[in-house]
Length: 370
Image: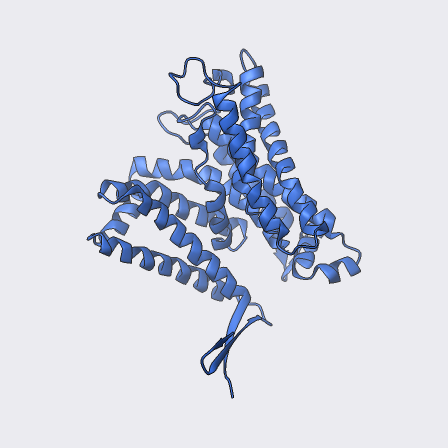
């Protein structure tokens, strides 16, 4: 690209950055995002330092705020851990929101039609299984198009587009066959039977799915990302890394990119589906299928995964950070700023985190045009 007498060229880095360097870039990206939003706060006449203090103090140092943070942490960590798996194979699943929603539909179907009088130790695991399978199958076309399509970027397009039928399906169900006849005209399903409601700690929205999220992080770390001298310790983890870096070389060595693509997106979609089950059946604000379930957590999970460096331990930390921002957003609204500023706050951080990932993988060289 030419700019006057200068020419810009984007090149892939020949040498990977060190762990410390990537951490520095990611922290800088978050600070730049916060600085960008600070300008908006100033434009509205608010001191950004005071607002940021209120957000983080509320989210992490008050009882109610911390519990709210933990409730938002649950779906985020499951979604982001799942997304990290195909991302490592360079498969861009940006449709976790759709997989999350289809998981809520599957769990709701089990709860509404088979939950009454059922044993909770049986029906709740079945709901989780249904949510995992639904989310996994919803993600399957991403792998097929990624490998078989001649269009580069088909995984991005397909994964994004699959969000809409999931959203429309929920809208159809809660205004049609699954509509609550006693819902006072609101579009929602009937309340789930008590036997299908996942236990939440009394007086909170923190439910037992939080342990499922932590278990998923441990399993993904242990089986797919744990390394010894820079090389993944499992065959599957090794193949994911190799095919992600160079699919042609990997397939020449006898590896199947289609197999890895299918495995990674099934894991990703399945974990997003589990997050949907936990949210619809574990969060006391719901216990039923409602349109508010779509809060774009799947898209936020993209930033969470990248900010965590696609490492399960890093993702746990970044999930807490973003969950705190979502929980602390109420302080921005209390200050008198419009609700749209909260969305802009989260969107700006997402933008800068993704820009940081670009610079971690690439560098820009400037030359003088003679």
